[in-house]
Length: 151
Image (tube, rainbow, N blue to C red; front, side, top):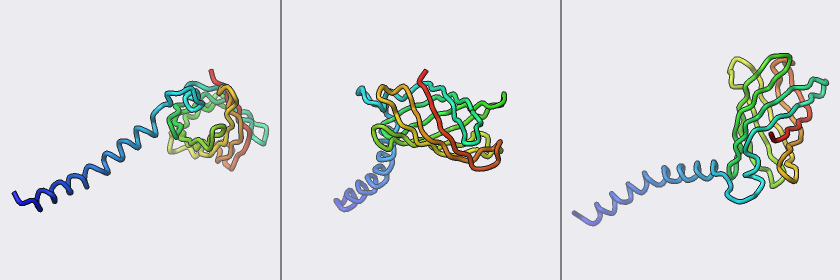
């Protein structure tokens, strides 16, 4: 076989395999748990807390959080007046002490979404910060403070 053909075939295979390998490695690194004792590992688990909105309404929250190398993912159940809303979220580490979480309702017919900026306390057992978003019950932009404790 001609050397030019062999080089062309190898180049074509490398062109096809490289993006797939890159995607697989990126996905693995984004979802990998820290193996050290760092804060990023300790955030994984169950959390419970409240969001106190600026209008005085208090909403109970139960969160299942998974902490990867760079991102946070999970689900939450928001409870108010015996009603429950299932939420999905994805977040990012802003620095060692702060995270940003973007959330949205799992039910596409319910308009509920927003963002939170939360501070991680020294022993990784408390997340506290601000929430802003659109509340389906209030039918308007809501804001408030959120406090979550690790269970």
